[in-house]
Length: 271
Image (cartoon, rainbow, N blue to C red; front, side):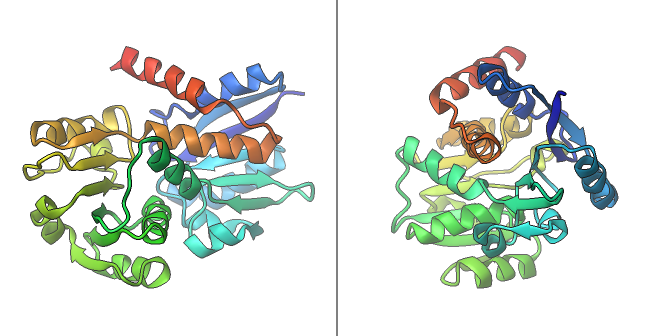
């Protein structure tokens, strides 16, 4: 019987995760299919129950569900609990969801592959949602001089209290006004999916890293390049966290470099 996996979120139609995972499934001879499944916030609990009842093997989770899904899972890894967010679910033999977080180690891998050293550098993190929590944890552990910028100050303060107590807190407006002092900017805001754009200051070669990719990141990355930033999208993070999820589900570690090259070629073909 062909088994089901997928990514749940809203929006989710743009996701390259089905392309990435279905290739790995074929490559490993696994009788399963991976689909993008749109789930509204008020449908999350019922959708998780239904997918579990249909014996889905596992799920990836994207915005806006990463924090909510952790509360709904029966069990969770220490990392997911500490971060307060989950992006991967594994169906247990008992027929329950176990929550994991592969965003944090996936982001860490992209810093390593991109030779991005954040220790002692001014790093501004835009956003304070589920993805931002994973990113902030990695940055704090690697010794970044971290500034958290978010529209809702209270959410940034909660993130700092949990994961980055030394971080400076700014409103999003104040943070954007001070970005010129940053060596690295990490954008976790989903502005591109709603048609909004960021106004960035000029940079003398700083790094602007948007964890989105494709159309969701296009406007922000174009603005960054115009202003002299080294612009990076989140495709590498997507592939890295996907590989870690696949390994959790099947015990097989896919080839990251080959998967990234395939995904990049597809992304460039559809842009």
